[in-house]
Length: 309
Image (cartoon, rainbow, N blue to C red; front, side):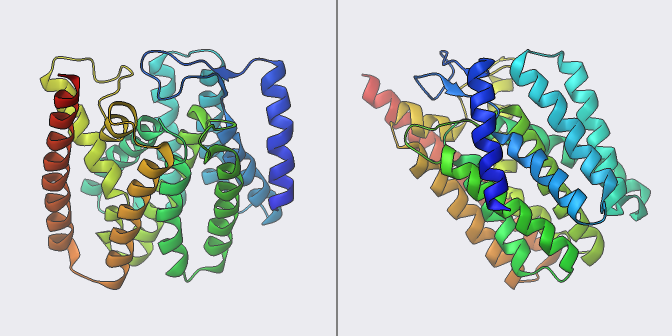
């Protein structure tokens, strides 16, 4: 499996260089040299392999990954209309909610489920801005899921995704990355993670698994609030995320910052799987994270201003 994915990556690199699928740095980038874009194509490829090798299991999920991955890959090559991308995200969300059995939930939970999944697809996309962060963070979510998985079919799917992440990180988790995930990578891995989490919630009726993405939820949500208060267009590219402040303004190594995010989320997830405080515990978790995030970001921004004087 790993050998197949490794070969696929090498072939893709050659094609990307030939057809110039390259991410050129700009004023909002966290890199300074052109890098191959779209290395995250390995994630849809992995789902295709899983689908073909497992009697075409989870067809609607596979279609969701392929649809979202396809439009995102096209967008990596040539920018597509925001409305088109959002429409495909809605389609993918509907498909994974159907495949996961979420439509069996009370009607009043369906709309929040849609909002959560679409929001997380965009959160993964927003957060994919430095080397290693998407791969490390997703492993921090995936490993606790694997430790507590009781369904062998799902465990195999998680193992496939884990191998794909490790292969991707071979080329991305470097001081000078060989490739970036691109929209195809961040969006498709978000669809995969959301499917696994929503399915776990449906099967266990345990909403603590919403906390498995709590770091991204808090970071993305509070950054949107910050930009809205500053009068900025929240859908446009920027450098106001805390991980961007750490890596760009503070000059911290990308892999260190990515590791911090993954480590914090991994610690939270391991705590969640070993405890059972229900919805009240989840509310307390998010309240603590929001408070800590605000305090840390304010402190970092003060240090940045002090350095600029």
